[in-house]
Structures are given as structure tokens and as C-alpha cells.
Picture (cartoon, rainbow, N blue to C red):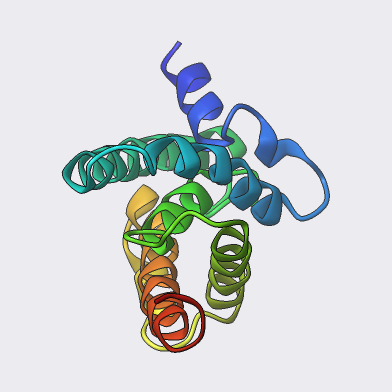
Length: 152
């Protein structure tokens, strides 16, 4: 039961089992959740995001046991966490959703310093926190670009 629930969460309802670009599809799966949360007050958005991060850390750690490898590609809950962090206080427009997606995928794949160091954390923490940090980089970049070019 525990492993079944963890697998469901870690793979984001089995999106992570898509054989091609599971991380990209995991990030796409985060967009409707972001959209729904964007209508909540900031404190609730942040509280739910932190809760999702903590649940994802647990599920990702269990998923390592299930899949028998470190940081399995099937785990995409970390992408959901990273995208939610990316979009903190970002106005909801199609352009922002798209640029947030692109920036997050860029930072998640490139892992500039010190993001890669977070992968060394034990278990689910290492799986999730590098994506959370990629989300922080993406969020900062999106806010800078948005203020300069897109937002009033």
C-alpha cells in the first residue's frame, strides 16, 4: 500500500512512466496545478507548495526502493515542485506559463552551480531539492525578465 501510493505520487499519476522525456512531461503535468493554485492567496500557494515538496521527498525516497536505482527518471514529482517554485508571484498568462516552463527545464537540465550539489543530499531530498533550486533560479530569472520586458 505504502509503495503503491508513493509510486503514484512520485510518478505524478504515472506520467513519469512515459518513455520519452518524462521530466518534460512531469513539468507539463504541473501546469494545471499551478493554474489552480494561482487563484489562492500567496500564503496558501506557498503552504501547499511546501506540503507538495515534503510529500514528494517522501515519495521519491520510496521510489528509489521501488525502481532500484538512485534518482530514477520515472520520478517526476520533483519537476512539479520545481515548476511550482518557478511560478511564485508570477502573473498568470500563457506567455509566463510558457517562459516559466522553458526556464525551469533549462535550469533543471543545465544545473548551474550550486544546483548539482543538492543532488548529493540523501534519498528523496537529493531528488527533489535540486529541482527546487532550479525553480528558485528560474523564478528569479522570470521575475527579472518579466519586470524588464513583459510586466507593467
